[in-house]
Length: 289
Image 1 (cartoon, rainbow, N blue to C red):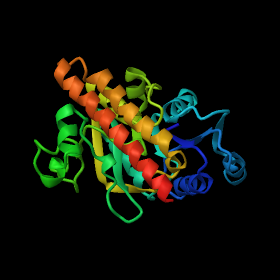
Image 2 (cartoon, rainbow, N blue to C red):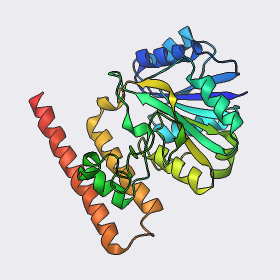
Image 3 (spheres, rainbow, N blue to C red):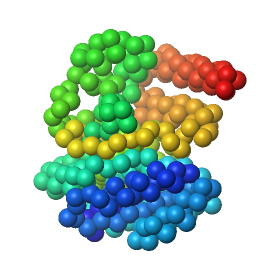
């Protein structure tokens, strides 16, 4: 088996069906298998997938176990030389899968590869092209300095928009909406960290991939469309909490020992303040609606 495609579904029946159809409509001469891991959906997703795509393997969870654990469940039983994490709210453009496999077959030092991720309006989902969130990079990003100087490497370490965005190049971090990973790489570094519920697991995986000496490649010559946040909109407070918890987990795991008490204190305070502000804004928005 060349490719194992893993889709985690949580109450996104229509989008998931469209995502699967886009895979079958792709130009792909390689063998592949599709796994859908359903996190206890209540919208009839499982029944619809079984009816329309009987060849898709479905793992049915009795609770929402999160993105990391759900993907790991499928990785454990998958057989592909490559594993693709693919969001349920995406549409794969017809040549994307073939081109990605072809590139990785030719470059054995590439551990993971991503593509250009487009939002429905045609703009770039910047999460597909990132540097690691060091305290310095995060500070410049959150204060708006990075946006003011998008082509300055010092100030734009978060999205690295100073790189040649129309050429294939090495990058720090991809997005879990589309991330193809070599099986050999997974065997070496391990699977997704299940301490991350639904944010940060892709950054953590990329960090470990690069730390182990593998390259991570961004290919803007192929793409997917990402209908971002389709399932996350259903539980905004849970999402806000998990997003900020992921920031905390990542810093504690990879950076806390590299920085002194003062820097760590600033990071933790910043995360707490941002979480508080996000909750307050959510409360205001919910009252208005």
